Length: 530
Image (cartoon, rainbow, N blue to C red; front, side, top):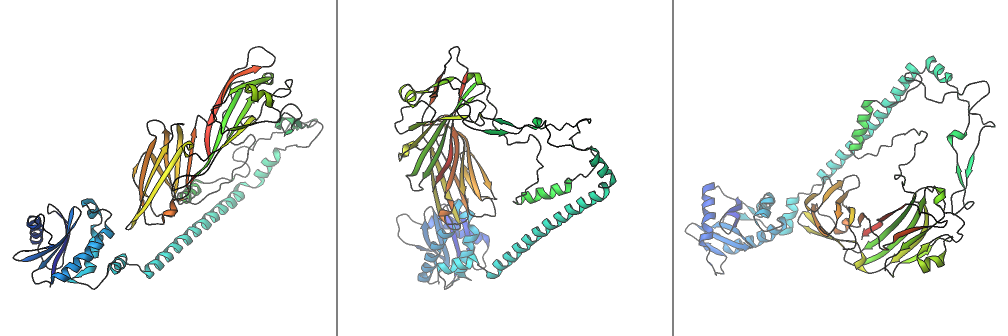
């Protein structure tokens, strides 16, 4: 009883995988495999064919044949048992029973064949034992990898300590060479008198609310602190000339080392010396005399199996005025026909005027709106909408992970409603810790893998009528399917649920109304699929 070869061939006789267990020339085995399709009859239920020299024991597998070539003295019952075991193992290692799937996992299939058949004879093994033997789990290997990783981490710590020592030594060296009498003399030559005399002043402004006196803001202007002294010109507060005094700086070599640490994912916090006038970046200042901002924040929780966990929209109408002469105004607005939105006015706004005529104005018409407010200005209106209607969701996400063999296939799809054109859409999918980036096989848009946080970001610049739906497919090692949740979503839009529009500016003193502009934005604050 000898199994000559175990093979997987196509219906046309093309050999995809073949393992010979006895000495046999390539021409001979190719001849056996090429002759097999001609011997298979149509409509027959037999699973073996005998010729003058060999016996074929086979089993169809979709568009392929799993084939054992044996001698005629072999025990056909045991050959059938061997064929049955191999037919269970092949789908375990190949994600698809076609030429492409078999070709990608050819070596894994050959290793499984070797575990089942040895020198032409069947081994007494089960399918689970074959998978265990092929995986080759080794405690020594895991221990070796842990030791190796600990050495790498220790080396990184040593590099950080060495870099710190190098920086300290350079600082000490610069102090020794340049921090002598010259530096003391140069530092002493620039005296700064900062005594607080009668010329010092602190200005207090009270324009931080509706009308004068409703709020206080303390502003300490740099120019208001006078440093003049009698009989002496004002001293210079500028830095000493280059080359004098202590100079602490980073060398090019240190910068290269810090860049290498950043590339490895380390967080480097650099000391930034504050300077006068340094502030956080802000939006461009408004150019029109009156600017009204309609902004809505979207908080949505979607369920992975469908449905809405929560849906909440919070909006504001803010007013910003540049000139105080334009403060005595009223704002005529128009709201959409959305019965689910509840509007609330500021306590200083005339509620009856707003309810009856959709005009936003102060109760005291002799008091102007405040000017020079930071940010978007003064909030006039607020509104909120909550709903359980899934048709109101601007963007729904479907995620379908499935484990097949040694890989997890994840298919994702987005569907956008017709209500909004979404901009700068980012769908962030959490992933387990990976050594390499995931294998993205198909995507509508762009993708980026954040290895530091182990997040795959799917980006679409614009979603409009041309791409209301899209998909992405990627492959990662086998993990629990719950590891891909929660999925976070970010986007913006230039239209809102309230559909609030500013129609006109009404000047209370008559005359020409000031020019105004409206800025409308819908953005996500917390948008997740859980």
